[in-house]
Length: 274
Image (cartoon, rainbow, N blue to C red; front, side):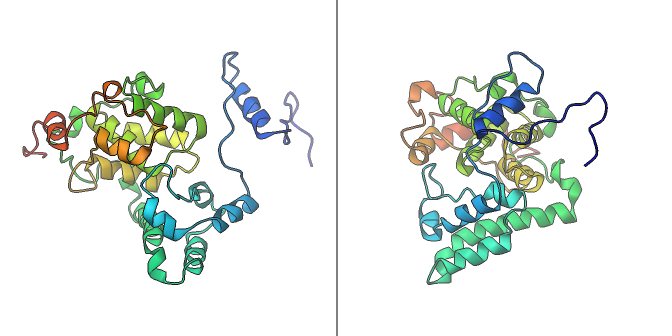
């Protein structure tokens, strides 16, 4: 091995714990106030990936995947970084069940990921531009370009949204349903371009990749779907459980019927872009 360049110091390669490594990386910013971040909730490497794969239950996944405490696999970081292949995961899922139909919903989700990747390969320019017009009654120019600081800091004043932001920034991971809630809030409640939110997610997520991330944001926005995705507080309470604050007075912006939210968020729907 060659000697380090003059004036440079080799960085350590081993640490006593994951938290020690996280603290060291935070300190590389050169800012005295840089926070000592928590270690991510995933162990790296092939052995950890195989252990996670061995623990999946396609039947339970199908029944509970939309719930934050459901039987989701958390395989996405390993797939994203090439430690596990989609083919390998699919084959293992089929081997876990007696009837292939029992793994259908799980395999459908793998197929969506493959679909996003194929679109990215065939049309790489679609990752950062609107594939279609917004179907919200607004033009793209009506949406802000930048993500506000209150969203980045988890200080929106909408309790469940702020909790999702904190979970994302602290762990680098967020359940897919919570990602949908957060993306919809950013685009439709705050009227911010999906590109700003997608870019922020890619900076935060351990499993973030441009294809799955950005095209999912476009689906929420309605630039890659036939209508905008929205949700209400009742839906959050149904799927998120007691750990997420769904007290109405702490989530006033979400505490409406779907009909009322549609009227509030999309007053011009049916116009030239709706």
